[in-house]
Length: 320
Image (cartoon, rainbow, N blue to C red; front, side, top):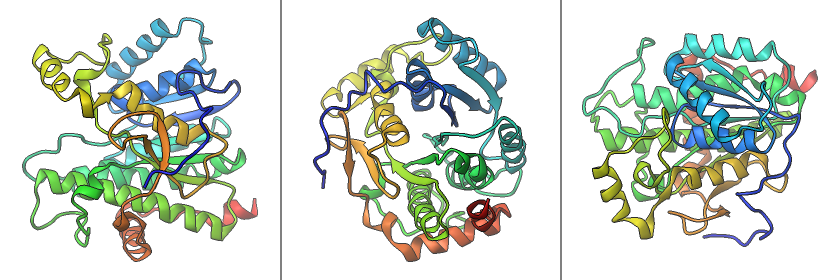
């Protein structure tokens, strides 16, 4: 069910974000790139992160071309592979040394999972590790700088969690792996962890909000071509435009993620997405039942702690 919210929010003209700092994972392409660009256009400083230095450099160059009036220090690139826990710890340590954070957009994921099950250097199923475990570890490692500014974390879910609500009793998919199941379960886990994080943050009195958002049905073929960031083939353009009535660009898909991250009227524990679920301006929505189930969330939280070795420092941060 879509709820009525204020109508004055304009995703094309965001509030002034001068002086604010955000970190975006997977910001060298797709939703992460456009979310970063929109934040920078509004005056924010953004840590653009991703696995590949050259792709990050290309994305940063694209931002500079497209937002020529941005300050020279509006962007900082940082190598961060959310599928690699060592990379997560290293990047988080670097960011912690730079001061507070107003928000973290936990966006990185694998849109097209491998046909056969693959594991990371840490031994975890790669789709689950990239979307859920890495972000769980990163958010925990960045809890203190977020609390310093009463910041917000946004976890990126998917409308697929309502289409096939698999119960992730085996989140690592040691048995019965399929690419689709890996993708959906990773998004169920990401969303459930996001809602559980808000419950635990509130209970501990930590001044950080946790929100879940999804981009609807956002496709590359309906997205502007940007050198070094997005270059869909003619075939992709043709195929995606055939679905124009139910799709949107990744640029527009980022609207919901950005609103969830910066709108002061958004509250922790909420779920945001496009107006018609698949496309449109961002609206507050109701998440799928399985992602809101506290028992499922508690089980996934324990699994994330065991897999990453990260325990969120709720008590230390609340007492600081």
